[in-house]
Amino acid sequence: MTFPQPHRTAGRLRPLLMLPALVTALIVALLGPAATARAATGGALGTPVHLQVTAATEYGDTVLVSGSTAELGAWDPARAVPLTTDARSYPTWSVDLLLPPGGQLAYKYLTRTATGAVEWEAIPNRAVYLSGSGGGTTLEDRWNVTGEHPLTAVFTAIATTTWGQSLYVSGDLAELGAWDPAKAVPLSTSYAVYPEWTGFAELPPNTAVRYKLLKKNPDGTVAWEDGPNHATVTPPTGTLVLHDSWR
Image (cartoon, rainbow, N blue to C red; front, side, top):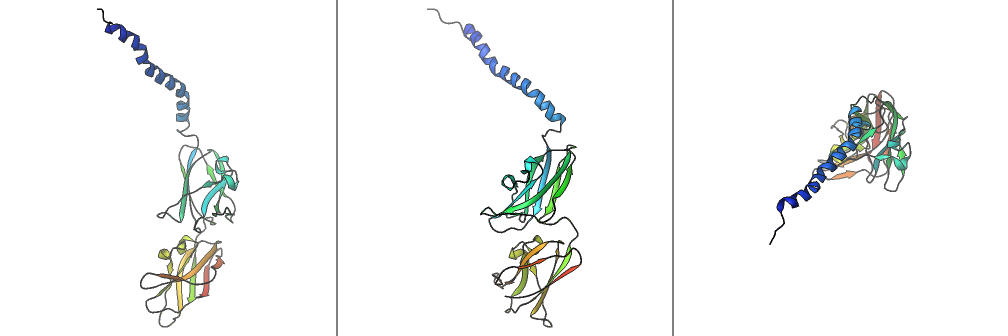
């Protein structure tokens, strides 16, 4: 009886064993020009931009950004780019983007409620030049603020309290705690002026502010005053003095 010769079988299989190497070589040859082009332009198809904005929002709201490029939706709210936040970073929202280099970028933030209502910032469009030199750009913004120096706000309030209670103010700006009682601004009083309380905060100029008083009890519970939010607009410069009474 004659058995098949092993060397003949191995000879017929050798082309099949070489096929993966040939496929790999073909892929490298096809992708080589694209890889070379990416290396020549800094390894990316655009300028890396890290956008972050401090914005206090209502529950269910989303912060987005739109602007003058297609990547930002070309000012179309339906195509605006959403930013994200979490319990640790709130009220800071952020997103990482690749944007066309070598030109002026105009952009603005907006919020969208759970029902789809859109609100744009009330300030002029923001603008930045993206040089395209290969490095990334970080833009740190504040909702409705164009970067001027902050001013001092003085909160005065008439409020009676029980033993151990303390009075605070919180609002829709990060400086006022972004509606978080744990980050609210404390007000103080004394035997000479009680029931008048006073507190201070550094606020951005030319900015709409909503705020409310709250009381903290010795056991840690919180009571907010009734009625709608107080509202004001900070002046361009100087000191803002606010007088309120507990409702």
